[in-house]
Image (cartoon, rainbow, N blue to C red; front, side, top):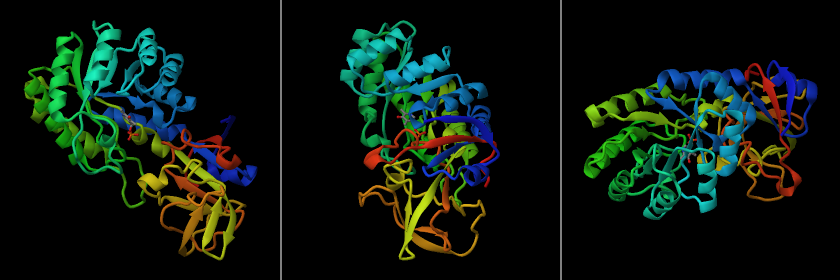
Length: 381
Ligand SMILES: *Cc1c(COP(=O)(O)O)cnc(C)c1O
């Protein structure tokens, strides 16, 4: 993806002047920096970034400039990317399943923090990673609600297994810690509360004082106009419950947001290729493009429509079925979208809050998926 050197005032200026045929992701570094500051100032501990949500170099560089010093990485590619862009940053290798070759790369790159959720993966680390000064974080899961989808379906030990794993970590001479992930786009502070209380029980049952508690990602971005994410309420709950649950043994807290940090820093514009029968809108972007996530975690209703000449359409809305450009019938956004009733061929449809899981999950299926990226001072149209 080419990042143009020009900085545009806002998406409207770009769209009016460039008339792009392919979808364009607009990146506002100022929004990313403001959100990063909101986390760094508000979260009661260390803020790290989950690289998988958006590994664009401009994103990493802006986060480093804002003061981030730690990254959650899941693969050799992500580890090398961060080592190159932020050589002194901490790498937290929190993908709980790794090949021996991947562990070898991590050791070579000086990774000092790993998470696990099974005895077999712990055994691999004990065999391959020098224990001295290295943290192993036990990841557990709970059946709690509040997120757009549940991360516990793939990773996380039960609380009982976590007790055994934590003892084994401490016995093997590693620094013992605990982590969990409440599930992405989690708007409920109560989810963190349940997890932190159980984390304290796990440490108590294992008879282990943990060094750090990583409360995961899952922090929400702004997807629905009517639901502004209340990060400060989540931070306050985490802070209060960590003290209540751990008392004197309160560990250092870490968070590793992806979406919550980067989501609101991007908007994506696609062009309307056709409007058929007054009901079906065909876009140059779809679920095989940057909108991959929408069928899984729900639609974003923070949309706007611009005419080709950059006028905002602000009339009555009508419900439309929206399709992407490929010939696959799965390439359809979930439900119907309330769009300006006048939406026409050649217009631009802008989705806000598109920074996470958009650039990285874009495919070239059917020959589509060429994305441009443009830097803007503001995302306001
Ligand atoms: C994906 C992931 C994150 C980031 O999740 P968000 O919902 O984007 O904040 C954090 N930690 C781990 C271990 C992950 O796999």
